[in-house]
Amino acid sequence: MFWKKKKVYLEIDPDEIFLDSKNIPLFDQHQFEGKIERPIGLSTVRLFSLSCLLVGVVFIFKIGILQIKKGDFYVALSEENSINAKPLFAERGVIYDRYGRELAWNEQGAEDFLLRKYTESGGFGLLLGYTSYPAKDKSGNYWRLYSEGKAGIEKDMNDVLSGKNGRLIIEEDALGNKQNSNIVVSSVPGENISLSIDKEFQASVYGAINHYVEAGIYSGGAGIVMDIETGELIVITSAPEFSPQVMTEGEDRALISSYLTDRRSPFLNKAVSGLYTPGSIVKPYVAIGALEEGVISPEKEIFSSGQIEIPNPYFPELSSVFKDNKAHGYVDMRHALAVSSNVYFYEIGGGFQDQKGIGIRGIEKYSKLFGLGTETGVNISGEIGGSVPTPEWKARYFPGDPWRVGDTYHTSIGQYGFQVTPIQMVRAIAGIASEGSLVTPTIFLGEQSKKETLDINKTNYIPVKEGMKLSVEEGIAIALNLIDLEIAAKTGTAQVGALKTHTNSWVTGFFPYENPKYAFVLLMEKGPKEQAPSASFIMREALDNLRLSSPNYFQQVDSGVTE
Image 1: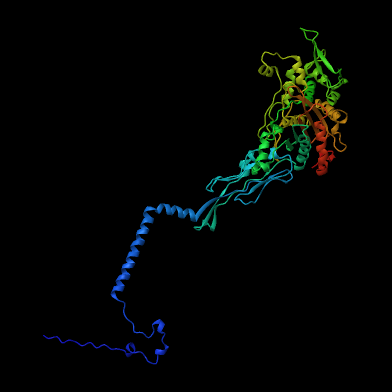
Image 2: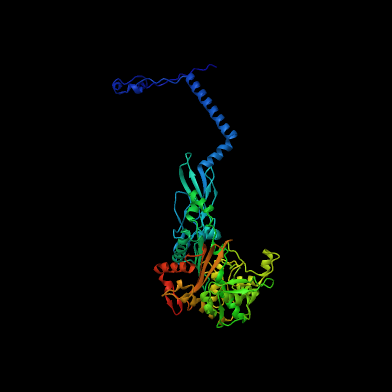
């Protein structure tokens, strides 16, 4: 069978072959308009395909290298560059005085954390302490994550003040520019603390003390004022001191070095950690002991010729002489306290001729009953105890040397091995002012203090308090005889140093006399034996300065001092 070949007829549109002669002038020849199209050649297609294949192979090879060989490295680098976790520093708690005035607070600085600032008012360095800031390593990462208290209240209450840091996630581009940030964990600010301190009163007492320290008359000093009822410390200061701002910033190396080498011990809080020979400020406690034990009445007079002599049984011509500060003649208990007669207290302490004394055991008993030589329990770190001399104490420190009556005499006037702190003495004198309530001092406003009631006949406090009042009116504490404030006080002077060339000067007391509200103590350390202003004179200066800024302490009414 024959197949007949079909004819295929293709229609050709003339427009596809022939150009419209009328349109030729309108074509853009540079854009190849009006030109006859020609198909791409096979060699060109093959060359293009080969090029694409080569580029694809190289790209896949590079991807493989990055993924297999360096994948982990670039993943970690990518995460580090894009997301960065930083601590969100907690705001440290503010420290206030009893009236809400800032003593330590925070200010914004150039760093990620707030800067700690302290009051410029003097007298707070050893009480407040100082802090150290968060710190970075060489790579810029924080290794110390908190502002940390290094001394004083900042250290003691660090856990309360610090708060808790949060966490901040920061998204950055490859150049380190911040793109976004999110708080993952919010920071918790530290708690604020209110101290019982009166900023103005503290500055006044410190200023009076430090004036004579910086003048080189005394090597140091300490002052305390305490609320007799609550135990709240209105003032507690020590001189010399360091600057908490300088110590926190840590930049003034020369000044910090001078603190460390200063022989006056500016890092020692003398109010709670300084041990000193008390001298005659222990006489009120010996007097109360003598009344309690019935060895003397307040009215009985003892004659002071200026000294007493104890015969030596082995060498009668070598009598032991114990001197008074002067010949006082006949003095009863009130006047003996007012003029601070040593002979009177030698006799009621150690006995002499027909006058019986309470002896060293009695002195030890009543001294310790009022807390002398023992810690008070105040909530300030660094408190130490002290000592009341006894035969056991002497045997420990001077083996083979027996206890003698002369040792009792010296102990009865606060000498020999007697060692106390100012905080012990302010607590003890508050016990006399309150007629038997021994309160634990506290530095925090509104904190409930422990109280102990002493088993002592209240009538035995009266002649002692009257003797201290008489000391201010006409005795050796007359510097504190103010027109607008009735004060009772007892002074003391203790010789110090191997050659007894220097003295510590004390004054302790309470005010107002009727319905006492505040007890105080002021110590001036290592001054000259003569022609130096006494502690009572310096306390007077502090009160005179206070009258201008805080006259409320001088408002005496029937119920006491009002605030």
